[in-house]
Structures are given as C-alpha cells and as structure tokens.
Image (cartoon, rainbow, N blue to C red; front, side, top):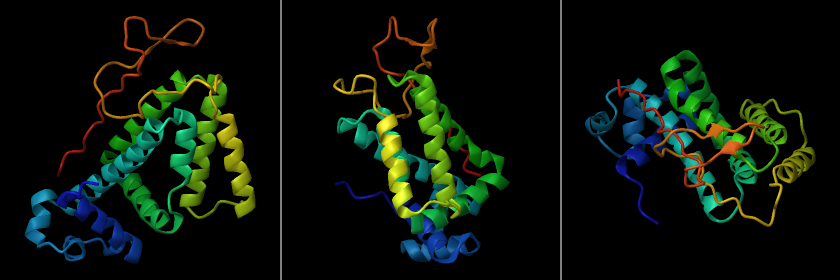
Length: 223
C-alpha cells in the first residue's frame, strides 16, 4: 500500500485535532504540531485555515468515494455498495469530525461545492441503476437520512433495530437481476456528459460505452 502524501497526513492531522478537541481547537499551529511539520510547511499546502477546512471537506468526500469504488471493483453492485459504504463509518471519531465539518459547510456556502457534486453524482448513479428508480431513490434517501441522524447523535434506534434496518436496505438495494454483476464505476471524476433519459424513464446509452460518464468534481479555490 502506498504511503500517504504529506498533504494527506496534514489533513488527517486536522481531522485528529477536531476529533480530540473540537472545531474550535483547529488552528494552523495545532495541525502543524499534530502532523509533525512546521507552520510554514503547512502554509505551503494551505494558505489559510479556511483553505484547510475546504480541503478537509474534499478529503473526506474523496475517502468515501475511494471506499465505494473498492467495493464496486470487488464485484458489489452500486446501490448495495452505497448502503454499506455510507453506514460502516466509525461513528465516534467520524461523528465528531463530521458534525464539525457540517457546521463549517453550513456557515460557508463555498464549502458546499464538493458536497453538491457528490450528491449530483450519486443521483445520476441512482437514476442509472437496474433497481427500479422509486426503490433506488428511496434506498438512497433512507441511507443518507440514517447517516445524518447518526452523525448528529439523534438516531432513535437500538443496535438491534439498526441491524434490521441495514439488512432491509441491503435487500431493497439488490439489482433486478442479481446474477449479473453491476460493473459501473463508483461516482468519480471522469469526463463526459451525464446520460440522457430515454422515453419511459430508462437510461439511453446509445453510441456510448455502456458506462455512466460523470462530470469532474468542482474544486474549491484555495483562499
């Protein structure tokens, strides 16, 4: 496994600071100390605290996409992979980091760019799924709703109930023809227009490769 880049280590250090002491403790000095670099070295990659937070939002979204892609490459269809990738995150650390980033996104509209693109990509994948659209969309909304409730620490379900919910979502997410693997890529940054919608609600891939083409993710200015 390749070693993480220095930039990735700095972003992980920023997440560690938030997880340990909250978003109020996130300073360039604290992150540099946690990452074992000088403040100047940190500023080389992130010119301000706002730029660091923006990069951290993108980094967390990228980690989710990488996890989703690994599952799909292993042969799991998109929708079950989305259920599993969304609901398997470590809740203690991820919850504190996630709620802090959620608060940051809510106060700075510029940070919404990678989040908006993420859900646009997922929506395109849901629309192209072999699962009927109504069921596919309902699974996505249920997964994201449960994820948000758990992120905020207000989910009303017991551990046993949650397990039953996840089992039900995984069952509902199975493709129409479970014997045919869904080999579409995870929602990633690839060039090309989104698929057109054919009459009757299907996806029109005539003239294409049969793979869903996704727009490049918009980057946030490093300000």
